[in-house]
Length: 141
Image 1 (cartoon, rainbow, N blue to C red):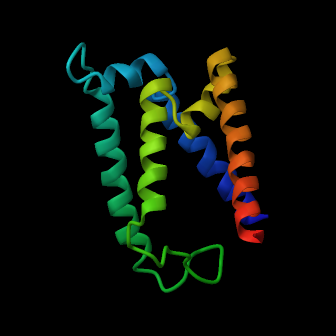
Image 2: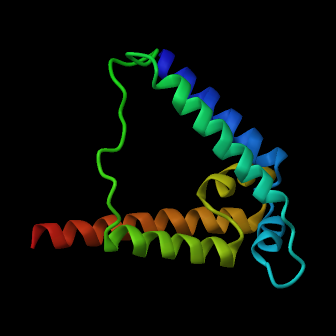
């Protein structure tokens, strides 16, 4: 139960941060990505603040022997970049640039009832299922 509550609180805090920073506003994101036109650098400060907090948070938390709510830390074991990662990151970046949304802000912006966000999340969900189905087919062959 404690884990579920902490996950809920982390999600609410993340969603509030996305909303306050206007990262749920596709126009704001697209104007950040438009470096040759009407560039808005404000989201760079949001990302810089997030990276700083994450850096300090990891340094602080990983000094502990065990986490607060589970038995052990679960950190990534791989550090290499393979073709699958690079391709997926490229598709993610292109989609983010075209739509002005990525999954977290899109889900947070649904609370405002925007049709574009709903279409984005539904399409994203369908694509995830298609990817998993294709992956399943290739693994069973």
